[in-house]
Length: 92
Image 1 (cartoon, one colour):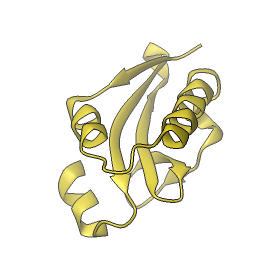
Image 2: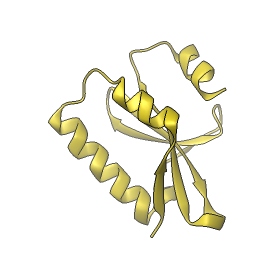
Image 3: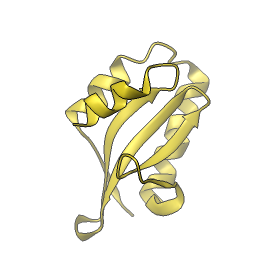
């Protein structure tokens, strides 16, 4: 079982999401549960050098895996309707 750690950027980007519906929260809980048991089940994004889990058609969760600490680090929640250049700025 992997521990899940939220970075300050993940917390801030999560809090800034506009469309946080009950279905979004349920989908996110399911993704995080999957990350705890099978963190490599979502694809690695070569552009950002992070794994990405599509929470729903509007939101993507970027995360990193730290195998030596048995940990998954949530990096950023991203709204797919936003400018993709914003991702680069947030991740740098």
